[in-house]
Image (tube, rainbow, N blue to C red; front, side, top):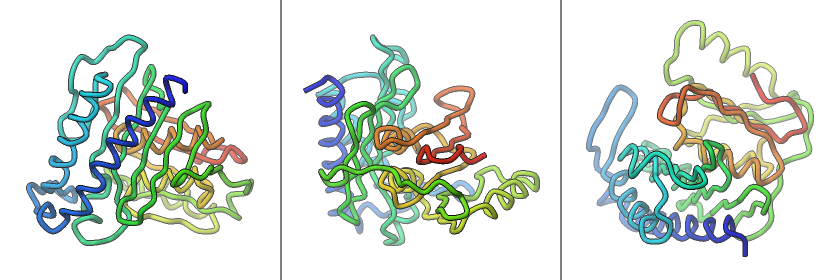
Length: 250
């Protein structure tokens, strides 16, 4: 087994532990701890994060950038390896019982996502993959779709988090190119669906690396392409992904 495959197993075990706990304790953990605009923090975020960080510290103690804790450990490591963790992507969905929420764990090498796990625990779907190794849904191989024309495809996206009149105009223009558009409230899940061939592309502005790293790794591992543009791992990003049969969505 390659080193990357071994690290994928570690990430999968950490995600499975956190996902099982989130599912079992939704009533107790579904308590709002903080609200800032449209963003909501709930107890589940920090509880799941603690489980994941403890697991990674025991098994593969690389630096971590996580949604709740920020940077954990030194920002540089041998080989340029960094874990990116979103303990609960889609917190409002989780709070409301909407099933599109996930535990998201990725490993970055020199800032590029190389493996990812997206555990959609409410739907009992776990997406795993590593670049050069393959991608799987509940253990079965998965690949991106073969659709080559946006007019025949599905775009996964979200409303720009820092919306302005200009960004909303660009957003509207983007939507018009596609047969269907889906906004499910979980970037990790949306990208996993591209990797699984359920949609052809993903595009969003203002995402953070922990939101998208695992999903981007899955898309790459499943044969697709990704583009991540930003000033740093702890800064908002422009993120695009597709099945590789068409250009990345602008």
